Length: 111
Length: 114
Image: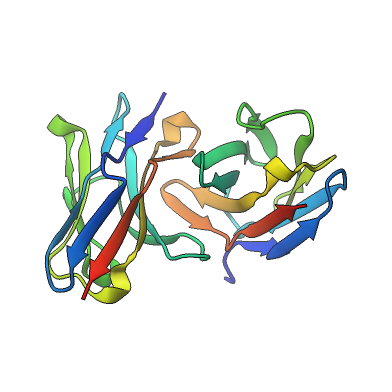
């Protein structure tokens, strides 16, 4: 398996633009997580899915953020409109039981 | 709710010396416990994990960690540090009963002196 695949690796966008981050989890994993990493707040969980169903989105910072998982092999995290304070590294991870795998992350810069 | 505390923000150690990174967690039942390492600009690499069985866990790169239920701790150790161990280390706690989500500590940055 190629692991958890995230795209793009880097994204630079202007304030106000829509940004879509993508994630392909490991086949057979029933959980998918989106994390955000910043210097100020560390690694924080934004939202997670179980069997493609959103379970807890309490970490999503505001309505500008949305996430979907239309099937077991794909998830998106969308920010609309983006703001400079959204600049961070966004990690996707998938798991089953105690087996967790993280993607390489998307480094987002909003200017 | 589960939580993780890494009391040391920075640790400086000489190459060849031993290293111990502290991790304390809060969770009602027996959790899954993890240590990850992150080099600058890189992703998270799993060093080791504990979810049951032997409380002393061996990981990659010569690291080990010991789960102590009575102290709610899962400290990471390495007998002899190499310059390449300079990185940030994260302890994390998860549990199937808590939706399998991982909660991370704030991280400990390790600097290695020649």
